[in-house]
Length: 421
Image (cartoon, rainbow, N blue to C red):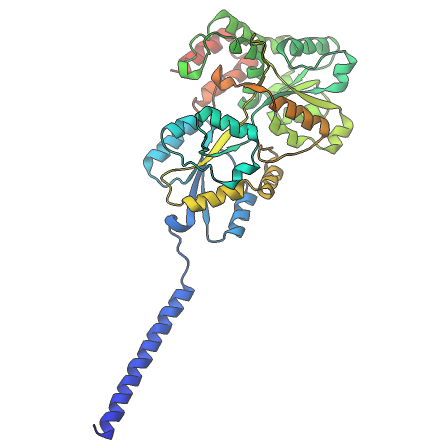
């Protein structure tokens, strides 16, 4: 080979090598500067819920796991399960779903939820809530995170009860006696937030529990409220109707939400209020310095000799869809969602208590709630319950209409029967 040929071959080889180097560098640059995959299968999860998830929770999760994207689809409580079923039937893009406790077993039976018993999150959750999940699912496995307890309490002004020598209002008889005594002494007995349907349902649940818990055949939505027209049930509804007539409820309560009614009680304007445990977040040291308050459970007289307090250890369940393509990310999110620091921030943002951590607002109140939650439960959903999830808005607003005197007990019964079919 001549020198000229050698030089030509060398130039060609150098040119090819240079081109390969440029191409290699191009691929390397493209890899280093490419955006991470954002496909649903790898980095994004969809959550279906009927509750608010605070931005602080989502921001905190994103800061800790910047590659993961959270999409929230929030539906109304009214008819939520219908929305959820339609969404699940539409496609398999839902990853995490929130389910009312009353429907938990249904979604296990339908093979919708993934068992997640091995998660560390369950070590941070109240045992009573976990036991309740096992009871209603008839399984030792957990198919979701139980969230928030749903016990109903009667909060009362201790000083007033002591002044008039009244026992804590933990039964219907004691509650009604307190209403009568306070009314006779010029004190408005009860603060009730009747402007929202949830608070109206709470009050009606309390006032009718004796009648419905003692019924031989439970009156439920699933049975079309069969038996609701029985005289004993009409009498219970009449107690609700007569609360305003007797002067136990003021007209002011018709314009208050549950939160506003509880605040009015804390301002010591009223002797009692009916509210769930979640309202404890409105109580602070300054309030406790001004008013001596306590809370008791409400015990229906079922006649069995056993004590059952109105309540439910679980309000909702957050589970992972079995068909999700993002199970690892979903488990990571649920673990983050149940960590103490996340929960404390959740409480601060939503003014809502949970069953994921211990809390202490005041030794007396904490002890009272522990006593309430140590009892066996009378769960209204198993006896008589106007559900915002399975029924329409019109059905759920019936207690408001009854307390407002817009309908009579007989009309209430007829409308409930009509709307349940």
